[in-house]
Length: 96
Image (cartoon, rainbow, N blue to C red; front, side, top):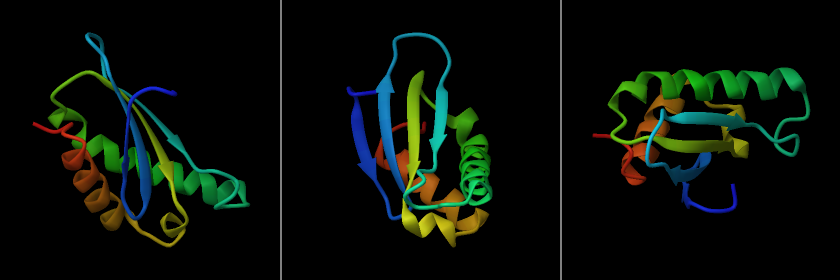
């Protein structure tokens, strides 16, 4: 995903490519650099997908989104993930 816009928050880096048609698609990435154990990376990805699921119905356009976790995501819980995800989606103008 070389093209598209990039947005930053304290927990995530968001890469967004707007599409003309189709459904919104998401990918969650937790790099080995920030979490050495697979269980930690999987936990971060599950939290990202959970935070996205609550916002999915509010999307206003078909997009492809890659969410890349940053180091502070290791210690954050679901409420913080959801709040940060909503803020970054508003910043990226993805919500209605």
